[in-house]
Image 1 (cartoon, rainbow, N blue to C red):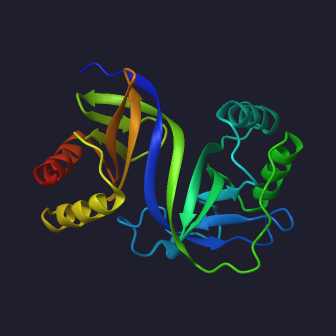
Image 2: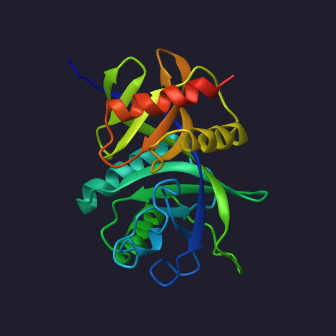
Length: 236
């Protein structure tokens, strides 16, 4: 089978629980960490060396920055620091509050967060003040990002950057509540219970194409096909 890497731009939506990071960040800045970035897969994420290596870090910015400024700034930081961070813009909605964020993956240690923030500030991207009170709140994350995809077959892709991440197309846009309900039904009606799913879209041939992202161990085309079939049986 001939494979080809494709770079697409799009968006992903998922629900996450957050906690405030203090001490390892610039003074009085608002930084969150996802308590469990794959809630459908890991039941006990707190046991996964969370105190050693940061996983999903969200730097809350003072406003929305345009894509070009964010991209050029991030490129310069990567070049200057020789780091391999993966950064994407997005929003987190908690109750009625919408926060603009930079989501960062592959930070080697918590001490690096402050350095990364300082670089952004020096290049004109600033951060929101830390709130006076913040609990372990659940919110909806919407990430706007580039995808590096290996096309397996029509409708199916694997991520070439993040291991065990795959995607398949679906025929219509779903609301978050519809997607949550469908996912519960799919998991109840198949043996493969341990996967996490989020919903989104990619731009493909000048159209917005709806997708579902799957995270599972040893993810492959067969697993993606099984899961997609169960979703399609229930999408009306």
